Length: 343
Image 1 (cartoon, rainbow, N blue to C red):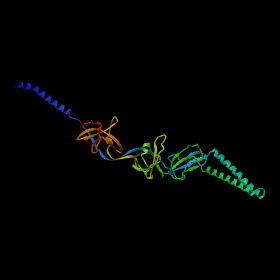
Image 2 (image 1 turned 180 degrees about the vertical axis):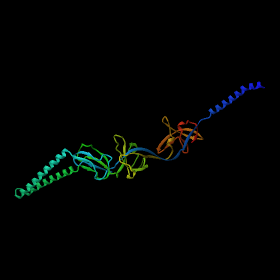
Image 3 (image 1 turned 60 degrees about the vertical axis):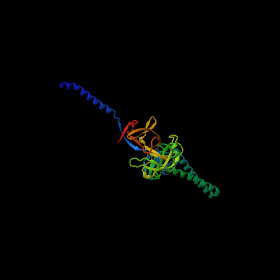
């Protein structure tokens, strides 16, 4: 009996080994299952949006230029760019240019000579040596010389450029020591009441826009996203950026300051009955867009043709039907025909 057990021992071992191998083979044949997130394709309207970038600036009604009243030299810049100023506050101090001083000296001498000639003509008229016409000519010459002198003195005496209203110094065009001509703009004051946004738009995009259309300006910390209407579109292409300018008004209540960089979004076209999916469901294979559509727990690759993009969704012209469930997360690890389970 003992001999029989010894003979059976190896056979039992072979049987157990065979069973163990069979279980391992079964485990290896089990297909992998991927964990994914799904979203449903829906049908509805979608507006294609384009991002625009721009800057806040003073509009024509909100800017006040400080100009040189006469040829002068920039002596001091008291309030540099960005300084908040009150009405009457000194911004730039000018000093008379050499030519201005010469003109003033000449005008002063001419006025003294003309006044003396007029006084002499009046004395001669009393003596009967000249007529009334001569006196009138001398009087007119003296009056003209006096007006010229007063004008030059007034301009030379107004070389302190002050802010005509409260606001901010938006720009200063010169540096101390610069010679500026009469009428030249020295500084620009922004009073904040006429602030606008200037966005750059590709000419093909600008042609689809019109005044009154809404631009959504992205919010920042402390400011919510807002929509403002397009005020005007400048069709002249900027030679440096190759973009056209799109202007919008900026209400003071937004708290946007001059010079602040802005990001906007505007709708360029709308499809009323498009099949749309979340943009994050879209994958790319060498330029061919595709998605994974899940049916009965199996992921199937669908090559698609895309349409407009609006916000976080994109229109699908071909390849997906309304009601299909598409993979939005986990798609990069999938293969066509793979089993999936949802998170």
